[in-house]
Image (cartoon, rainbow, N blue to C red; front, side, top):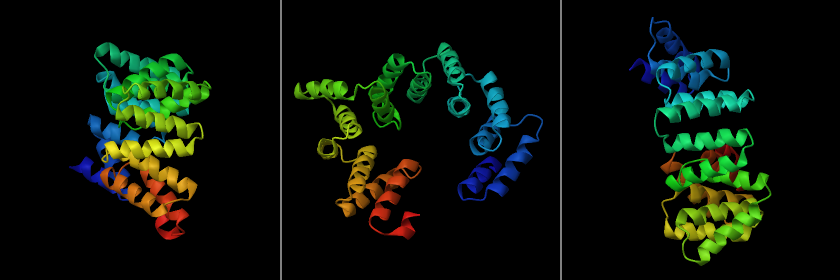
Length: 257
């Protein structure tokens, strides 16, 4: 209950009080794993080495602890040590099959080491298993862009679409690729097609809202799409950013903040 209260304090902007509660629990002889992880989640940017020590302690006993692996990987990426993150995830894989989010984290680690072939393979696995997983389409688009393969990837997906073998998730990724290549009209058409097939896809709603906002067109529809997406997934920062962008484009500067 104390940990839950500390988390609530952080989430409502009362960091000092939340940290004080965490420090009380960290002073215990054997702090709970949840406390160690929560401190790293909330305070890693201010005390990265202390957070790293706590996460190392968690992973020593639980090498496949997903949250700890993600948090420690972010510290490794920031410190320019992606190979360490990759080695840690591979160690977890030896203990058992990786979850889809950890497969994506492995793909991100491989991309950070510029191992584009294996990064693409892992990212495709993650995307195929969970198309709505945040980060997978973005990573695949980045991999193709870095390798100057956006056009080739688009042709490949288009051929699959013409054969009638491209699922909605593939259409969504194709729309992302077109947007990345600057083909806004085609991206918009495909986002509309995706939402016609699956009106519940929050990422597609967010993508179309962002595209409309960037173009400065149909801003009221962009607002509705972004609002619906944020209502469905209120913790997604990128969706909140899209809604803020829409408000800014509409000249509504106070809600944009």
